[in-house]
Length: 405
Image (cartoon, rainbow, N blue to C red; front, side):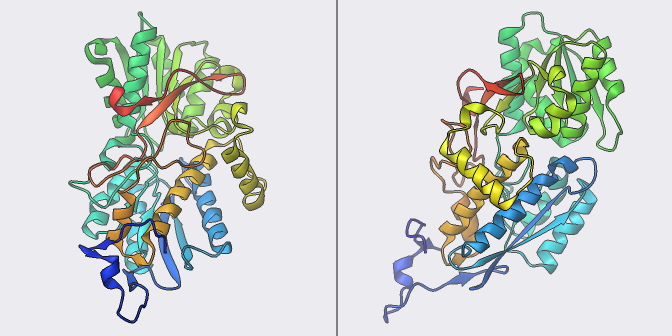
């Protein structure tokens, strides 16, 4: 057992559970955990229009296999059960019901997408199943009062959007903004934050167009934005469409100041397909070390990650920041389960998840740590701006925390 974990279970100290014979404190399990295993449920789009994110699920699979090969967690093997939901909310509901009711997992981990997680939000909270470190930055995942079983991981989209707006207002006195937005809760969260950050300058948004995740391209939307006279482009789209939009803007000779949402900042899955030349000067917000940024080449955590990738995911494209994201969040899930010790109940899983103070994770930018509490379900609340230059992201400015956005 991890001696650092909290020693209180329902108000009874761990010491009080030790039998008079000197035996170790009793083990406690909920459905999905035993002396032998811990069952974790996961889903993501291995297929469909958001399949660029499928590499996240592939790394999770490799990560938990490596954990098991090294002996598991406190002697228990992780049974990681991952299903394809195609980024389709009805399919997400179907596979999550399967994970909870048939596979009987202890917890759900890193389910991906804002509309997809929205579809299961009430269900998993009614079932009281930990819904942890989910792969979406919508601000609603940090609401322990109403949804005590759901916790996000990455900085929230609303704050990120507000940071872009404030940077824009400070650096472009003649801004005329065009917005491309995926037409769902993910897109709306970013745009609402951006509008809040614009404040009284909201009239500078001269055009706002949307697309559906099922659309083949966003070419016509980008043409509309150029025709509006916008000189700033806020690109709120998932990887496939983000790459299309950057490329189309270049093809039609539109050269606005571009802000790209963090979820599409991967060099491998977005910038390279869009074209390095077309991507010069694009701005984004970062909280993780980018694997294409040479300043991190000698940092111990980047070296460790590359060695891990070489061993466990040989042949994977290490320029894809999605692998960095997946590895980082997996180390947090691993630490959470380690701290549970032999009390593998759903309640204790959430208690440990809500008890991190200044935890440093590998591959997170310097100055950013993990902090949670029973009333704070936003593990990461800081970012640093970056500009695309040559073939990688270049950080600039200070680390900005949510409260200062």
